[in-house]
Length: 152
View 1 (spheres, rainbow, N blue to C red):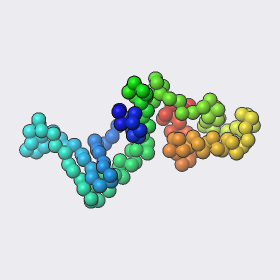
View 2 (cartoon, rainbow, N blue to C red):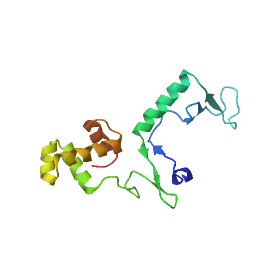
View 3 (cartoon, rainbow, N blue to C red):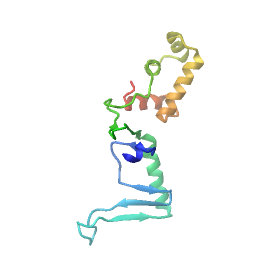
View 4 (cartoon, rainbow, N blue to C red):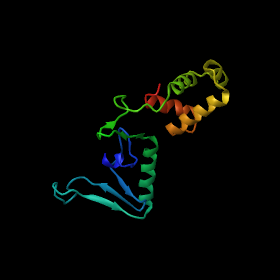
């Protein structure tokens, strides 16, 4: 977590298909079953994957999970702020939350603007900012990500 406090970007997902580290898009390290076919259970083993189609596939797998992962934040004490609401920073303002709830309910942009006393363009700008924050390219993806991240 010291790396995150120093400015590194880290993300978290609940489940991964395998453990993997990728360095400079040039090499990947995958831990293997302890002991392997002839190895000792006390000796950790790993596969080093260099420039190959397998490396490209592992990088694509990594990037796919990275897109859906939730960014980690660490406070000054080194405690990870999770997504469960305890110590987690709230990325949305009260305006964004209200707008998002109306959007998910199927209310049109023009009606949202009217109800909230905003211009239609301002509503669209807020929606676009939330989509970028969630890594969504469509409003449907935004709704799904909002539910997943506890924004609703």
